[in-house]
Amino acid sequence: MEFREVVRRRRMVRHYQPEPLPPDVLERILAVALRAPSAGNAQGQHLVVVTDPAMRRRIAELAGESEHVARGLDPWLSRAPVHLVLCCREEDYRQRYREADKLRSAARAMAGPVPYWYLDAGCTLMLILLAAIDEGLAAGFLGGHRLGGVEGLLGIPPEVQVLGVVTLGNPGRVRRTRSEARGARPAAEVVHRGRWNPRPSG
Ligand SMILES: Cc1cc2nc3c(=O)[nH]c(=O)nc-3n(C[C@H](O)[C@H](O)[C@H](O)COP(=O)(O)O)c2cc1C
Image: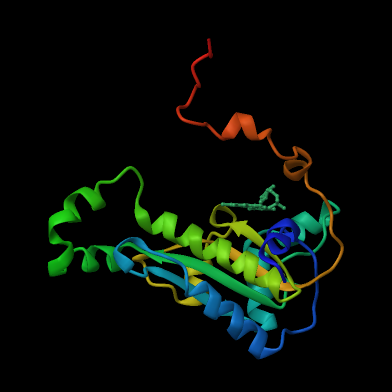
């Protein structure tokens, strides 16, 4: 699929057909995810791939799915045939920036405006979302704030942070959420050309 079309079609999907994905499709999506950039090439982004139905149901329960369904929403995580739990590990960056070629910039990089491990995980997330569309599938992202307890369930070590879960599969019913109904902001509000507030001309 042409890149612009992949980007145009991408949207968060929260309802799936439950059939499993062919393993080769999942492997291709993971291969794309591994192409994400990372600060210092530290590669501190991690994914826990969950396809086991019982485990997916348990993750769905942690995310409060039954309450959402009781409120009339579609079952989301329990039906999505693949969960990719997106994580990052700060220590991967600390180790990388202790290497000889990084020592000079380490202090500034580690004290930068935001921890780079979160930016890098965002890059991974975006690649997964786009790779899913390219495979003719749908994807969604549930933020880590809704996943308390998933670390224990999946044996994720304490120094690893869970950022959320990407769901993959064939789309079911597509509903617009209130967030999506906001639509896109006018480009002029978010693209600041030359400086934040262009000076009035003349
Ligand atoms: C960091 C992040 C966290 C998100 N968390 C949730 C979430 O917990 N639940 C949810 O339904 N959607 C979540 N979303 C999806 C957004 O609501 C969605 O991307 C936004 O409304 C724009 O819609 P679109 O991605 O379909 O264009 C999240 C998206 C991002 C990037």
